[in-house]
Length: 372
Image 1: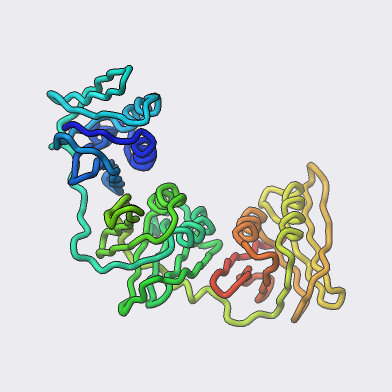
Image 2: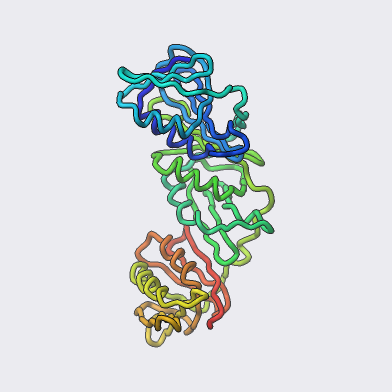
């Protein structure tokens, strides 16, 4: 193999593939990346067996071939090359890296030992905005928590429903749903559970990508692809295994009727809750006293070691008075995920679920805690 490629392009490609390559593993091949030629592209692949990333970079191919090298070491080496163009050449399982002033040799691994990556042949395409997907994922990415007893809630639900994609996450104490419009309406509906780690890789890989990305689905695998701007050819392909099982019917826990509705300024409320959290006790409790007559929300917290906090916010309030307590960490997460300047805080009763609802395409449900 002999290839010439722009350094900046190769460095960016390696930043993506090294996200899934592993270090110090029982299978050393998983710490490598597969470098090979494909038409007019240099193709680089890395995998951890659960997920994989493939990157294509436009190159000048003088000789075809392939080799495996340690991914993170290779990425570090090329980052120090000074020239704009890098030459990669293989000889006897050695990868030579050269520019005008430097010649380097990296010991390679037999490329035939590299794991086979699943293919997305002849699958129906679903197109979505990369920016909207990543922005939406970022709102709910940290909600799931590992659960050996219920692995299905340790991932994120992707529910494709004709013209929208619903992203749902829960840890049984809170739940969020975000809707995203599909750019290619679907005749069928699909649901899958993506591991949280894979969702984080999507954010890291496609977070800076502009424009559209394509989804391809199988019963146990997801493929996400972005195309090169200059050519109708893939630039990045990410694939991941899915979590087996059925996601809980989360609609059952979403209240349909509310006794109290409060309209709040996001930044003002968030600031007060964060301050109250400093005085919270062992169970992270802050208490809200809502009075329709006075038109105010009172925020309280206390800690026997530090003291107590009390503040009030004047708001538009509909319905009944209510006193309710929340874990401040979950409440802050929910408020912080809101983009809008204002949102509705909806309550059922002091022991029932409450909802933060800034818009029709996003809501955040959280359970109260028993007041101490």
